[in-house]
Length: 245
Length: 306
Image (cartoon, rainbow over all chains, first blue to last red; front, side, top):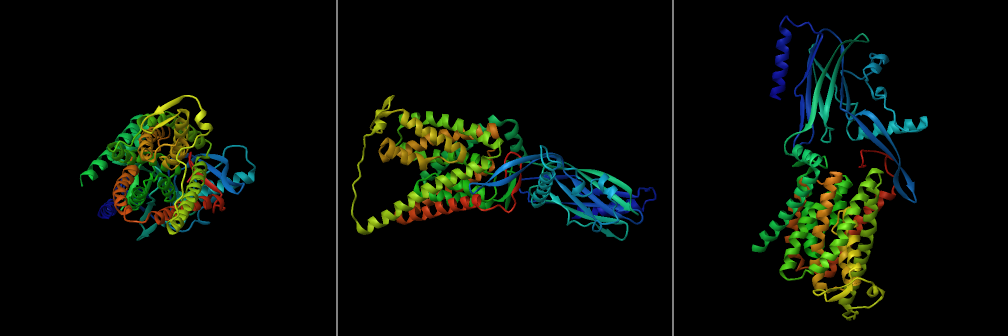
């Protein structure tokens, strides 16, 4: 919290200096979301200042990923997966924040160009699908991502302070996908993008958890042997510890 | 207090995991069962991906079998020769099982197969235990003893590759224990269970082994089969979560000690009835989830669905 305040104050001071001429300055309180052993989600403060009037729109998008969507069907009374499509280059995480609810003040062309809104993400499933099926799968993908907390639209308003400063809390849930994120801030004035700024954000596992993950994926054989050895020693340890008592 | 499981990639309350480990450990202490057949479904219920639950549970069983086999070894209740023959089948079965696991995972059906296997096996075990404990309760009330034939001769004794197992006092075809070991290997790979619930009755009723050496010998074989499964799952699928396994081991060790102490003071038949109810409950929940129409027919998965 203190760090955030310092950030805001520093920004405010920098604005006071006559050198500035940027219509939009924005930054994040942290550029790294560290998934540590006790990670239960994180909040990053987005703050900045604008010159003059205008609305702000922020798009937070995670690394592009290939996601598989499966559809269940009832086969002899049991629901099982029997159709599968994949979405290439779908952002693993996607969140929109704005100073007010997105409406007519934000023209379609801008939304399309800057991918503001899921309908502009160009999600198309692979494979031979009828248009209706394709639509159903795309809707299902978005619905599932929303339920997982990876796609967020409604919450996260940007608050303006005194007409010039703004701030917003960007929340990342415990199951946040790892990778390099892009935080795009747009200053919209009279239906046009007055200014834009892009800031990177890294989400990664840090500490022992990250080491274990890396070990498991890069040295799978050694990891397997280690897992067995740990289990054997745990078993022996338990047997001897309780034998003496 | 939450802990982030690096391979399962989820944040779980550590006390919930410890509690589950202790609870299932207690049951294993009381009944002498491995507990894998309860722990894997429980992990799935709290949201661990079934593929991670199965592989990690195999890792935990290595630990519980090691500590369990020592006590039997000290009392010379392990038939090593029988154990090795079982193991030959077990290693083959578990290797094929993990390969099958990967294949099913690639086509997106592994979760279904895991759950169906549990419904099937838990249903059978639960029903058998329920019948057994009702009978036992009735018998203890009427106190009429029944005699059972100890050793039967049938076509199984005509199979080739006969071997002498001195500790088990048997002269039977090596194909029999090897086949039992093979089935146990497949079960361990696909379900993350030790397979004691299948192997122990098979050793008693099919092989005709003396009850005294059955548990020790099966534990001996389970160590190596689950170690093989752990290695292959870690190597091919990267689904073994050491952190999760360690927490479950800790809970399991404590639980097993409590269980062994408590178990002696409780009435066997009623306990077995309780375990049967629990097993059938877990089976019912898994089965119900498969049969009831899901809230969303679509799901996202990258090799495994949630």
